[in-house]
Image (cartoon, rainbow, N blue to C red; front, side, top):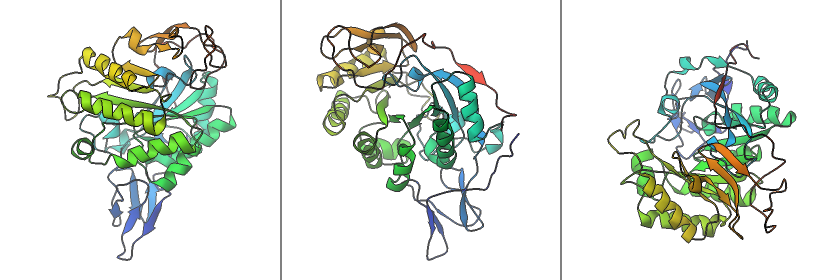
Length: 362
């Protein structure tokens, strides 16, 4: 078993003239005195340097369907080896994984594995890719990058599930190692990001533009619709129009259902009708691939050819019921090319979730 290095050297920081240390990873720009941790709680100042306290330590490992990330246009039906650590650089009151992302108890990270062990385990279990998820991989960047390299050495793809709250320099290094990303666009208003996430909207928009236009990383976007806060028809239309104009109509957009959690337990769940409305609005703004999530909605989960409207991938939740795409990602009916990353389709993984225990892996 490897020993988790709680003083693993971190990238992206500099010393200030007044003796403080500034973290340069994300727009929070945390300024730390000796022994202090950043807002993410996992990057700390120790002996006048920045360290990552969760390198090699995870909140758990699971094999998931790729659709759970959610990614509907990146090797549909394949399995993905998923893991996260603890901490987050946003403070979202609506967090659906708050027990992991908001954790300040790093001792609960009992599963340990080196990057090489993760890649070997993913290959051994027949996974097509490895996902950095559950909490935001931005805050465990060094562990994610080393693991991505180990995965690529073994022919595995890499997936980031992230809020995209990161500065330009680390963003370049991070997304150069990712084959696909689902970015959580929390809302389309600065007011929401400030009040509910303790962050700002513009850095996330910058990340989305960067991924789409300056990398080969496949991009999909998710927006969790919260009743009364980010689900108005006007805001949804503005969000969809921005995606169409700034990123392109081929970028898939997922609207998912909120359930009461963390600091928003007084807010009701998202009605299915709201998701359907959002999907109609986004399609009306010209987006070609718009999905609903966290609900059973077969039409809202189905990939259709934008040219002839044939159902190409029919889903129920995370399970693929039928698959008609060619290995090259074309519609067999009219030959139109479907945006995404595809390959030979075999037996789909299904919607099950399989825990993997890595305690003795090194």
